[in-house]
Length: 409
Image 1: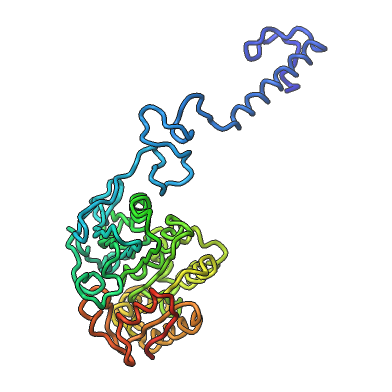
Image 2 (image 1 turned 135 degrees about the horizontal axis):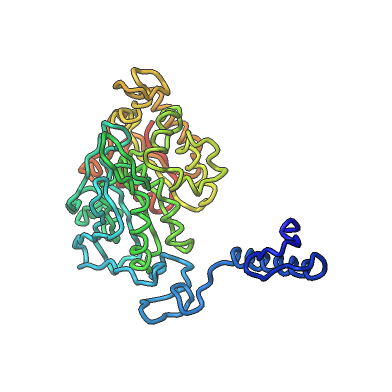
């Protein structure tokens, strides 16, 4: 600033000639500093609209609603529009395509709904169907186009079904990321859209206001959807709010530790699907080891939502999940993701399930089936599975009633 205040008579910044190196120059220098300060203040000041705008709390012309943008799940979206209501004929399935969502191939995703306006209970079910995390991309889009499920927990005609008269939402599996991602990644020279988690966020914008009268929310799913039910539990619980009773029931997608899901594979999942920016973004200090995120996140849920009821169904040596997680056991070597077909050793898988039960024995129910089978909730196995004299529907009903109960080895 002082270097510019000479007596050469140069015109600086269009202010006119500086002819006096004394008082006048000092005055001009002070003015310049003040101008600079004003400019910095203007740069630092936030952009505040001068007229009506979306988010000002007043419904202006061209807006359907305006709640101040404090809650995107209250029936007024951040762009001041009202989301379409989830409608339908009682007990008849209807598919709802949701703009702004994406399947793995770039097509628009959606969900099915079967309503019971007389019920204050809602089941949200996430479908399974493999996973896409490397060039092999072992994934099959399940129920796309939408095919209404008919058996297991979806059988409304069987009086032994504990959710027979509930409102039901069915999320087909088309994202390939165990319903947990929000990232575009190129695999096998193709652009893949892993948007399972962000799709659920978009669905919640419709679900929460449409089911505003429900008092109980159950999130569940099988296989990839079992994993997804856990990964999405927090955002679903937050969206519906603390006034609801919240239940998490995971069929064959258990939150196993990195003893089963090796660190190299967990790292691959995180990087390919963008998990650090979805559910892990809320986990913070509860997830100190991102390469053991399943264990960390279940700890986080238990700490943050102590009143949530949780339950896990699994075969004690599930061959399907052992095969997928075997991608981190290349040629039988733990924490080797270099390729080569393998499976998680059965005794390692079983012990981790038993450790999981013991850790949360007083908080979460378990139903473990001896053997290598996989899933039961949406199939006839829901009705025929019996372990130690306890049928699966009976255990399921106890979980919904608030009991903590353990079945199996």
